[in-house]
Length: 118
Image (cartoon, rainbow, N blue to C red; front, side, top):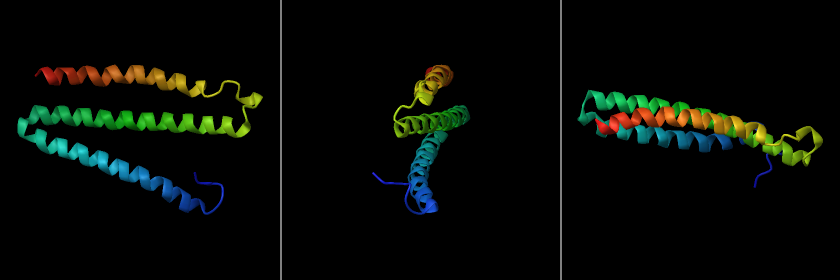
């Protein structure tokens, strides 16, 4: 556990951003490898993979935003010791997170089932 309240802010930001950059690099490499192998199946397969890849990145960005918001709220509640100003608690961020997951998941899964049956 690191105390990020002490020390240089840019150093802490670089330390936190380094892990995210490495993870995003590997996700991009997985996508490119998939695209390489699917390219032999035809243009329609490449188009389907490109569409699903873009949707996956958009969903990833959306869940990252919601996750960071939820984490910051939980941290604020923990820091304040559950003061009366935070009566809602983390539920205020879980409800939009679950709602968007229920909306986005079928939108991503349904088109992919058409490509599997082709």
